[in-house]
Length: 207
Image (cartoon, rainbow, N blue to C red; front, side):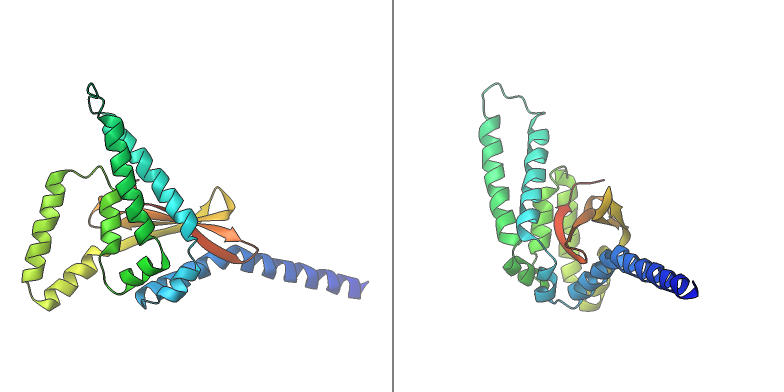
């Protein structure tokens, strides 16, 4: 009787340990991705990205944002459909170029591919904000290297919010910008098998 009781306890403990590891796997992946990002390790980072799914999700978001933006325009002369098709074609090409292992490598090497993609997707920015950012960028470049590095660090400060999304097979990371809400974004991961995860969606629309 005592042996059966001990065996039952061991089984329960093994189940709890296994479930705990299974439950906390996305947090470990987030830590690994974060470390790879700051270490500029594009090889490790690419292993956790489902590029095909991310590209398609971004294209869908861009298409929806374009249609919403152009819906306010008077289309008496029938130019709206042409404009939508042209803008979608350009944005899709940009996404195809950026959301690839090569694009990730360029971003890690310091090329401004991420900012280009962000600017293309955040379609509700007004021109005054864009001009202001350009002026700020010029002023920063004219400053000393030390002040520039400090400014960049401040601009990259985000508050992260982690948690499961809808079920235990989807996980969301929200990055809320402390300086500019327009720079906030979220990343969704999907479970692959029992313990592996892949980034399948990047939502750069404001929330």
